Image 1 (spheres, rainbow over the protein chains, first blue to last red):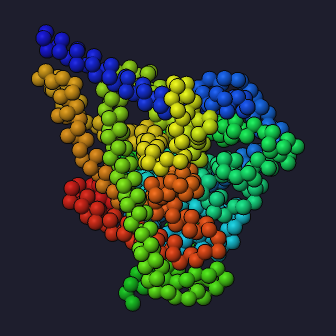
Image 2: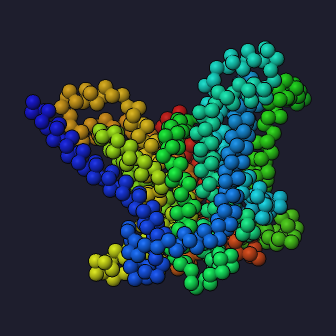
Image 3: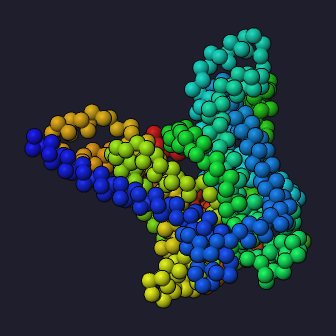
Length: 296
Length: 308
């Protein structure tokens, strides 16, 4: 009896502290999002008096109106990013799984040598400058390929896929081979359909990488029409160029624009899609994380 | 002779498999191994119109300049200090959160909390940069709004370098708390429940169970995670530093890391690229030595977790 009582008390203390701590961290995680959304609906001229708050002091839709007066600017950036996410994810999945398929084949004599050939690149690199020179040498300045190529392959994903393929019984491939199927056919017709769960998790990671990427754009893209979403947002925050383009398209002088709340509204528009799909993809994501934690 | 023969027979036997490897092999040759050869730029005075081979050799001059200017020490110190803070604070917070999640009972509220903890992982550092600006900018940032509301004087965060260490570490924790705790939570879920049941029979309370069962059994996972991160101790989270600090040179003494330095040197058009290439090579080479030695260490602790 006494023991039970003690346990109830210590569990009670633990539960209370636990919920308070986790509750506080959860709120801290959400507050920047809420502040930004609220900021985007605030009247720009009231900002200097009242600042950004959780609830706007003076509600206003001006920032969004300004964005949608020249929708083609943001639409272009959206277009670049969406095409990039789809092409990058599909091509990446195809190439990564094809590579992993070969590396997992036990009858492929040089599989360990090739595996090390890929893996070594994660240990040592030439650094940013030589890579930059190679990219420039290949004509990547203002080239969409500069956005696509940097994330097409990932050694980490190749290792995860190789581990996944190893869990598929070899007899499946062997019996198909007896029926006269070639290696590529076995990979494309048998292994790929069986790997949809693994592929969709890795695909999520790749898609997220492309969606959030801005670095190659900063290095290689100077043409405003070719900028992906995140880099466009970066420009909105860090250069007058973005504001001038909007001024040109809408005819509103830069000085009269709700410049500060405009930045917040852009942040909301850039982040919105990820937040909207988040509840649906979170589950797969967590599953993929725990798979990735197990070493390949 | 024998080697080429066996390669030829293998080529004939598995022609299709070799063909399927071609895209990946080409990709890594062009984008990884070719740049590795490009590190000769570090020993040259690089001029764009002369190219890599036409530019004159300068020996170790680029390295000498980097080390004598005092930049090498500052950048290395900042990079290592930040990474140590990320590793230590990240581990403490993530393990703590994982333990709380594993012991608390309410399923729905836990799910809600886990969702909000993981949310920051999904947004880009550009967006985080915009959050930071919205909170800390002097005229109308949320922080100063709050301070003014309490009758206190506003703080000039962007003009005060010493605060930035805490802001950067804070936002690192903020972005990765949910993501990082998943690994530890999975490890806790793998602990045999019978251990806790027999501890219950012995009358152990929850704090004793955490201290004597959960933490000791997490030890290996924690050590491995720390060693893996220490392997990248010279690599900077470029995205984070660049988006939070940007080109605000007022803060560089406290916030400049190797990656941001190399990037700026590259981005200042018309300058010699030999020096940033030398800094990059220094980072890569020392990092390589660290990883290889750590891997040997991990192999001793637990061969299952060794990288190679």
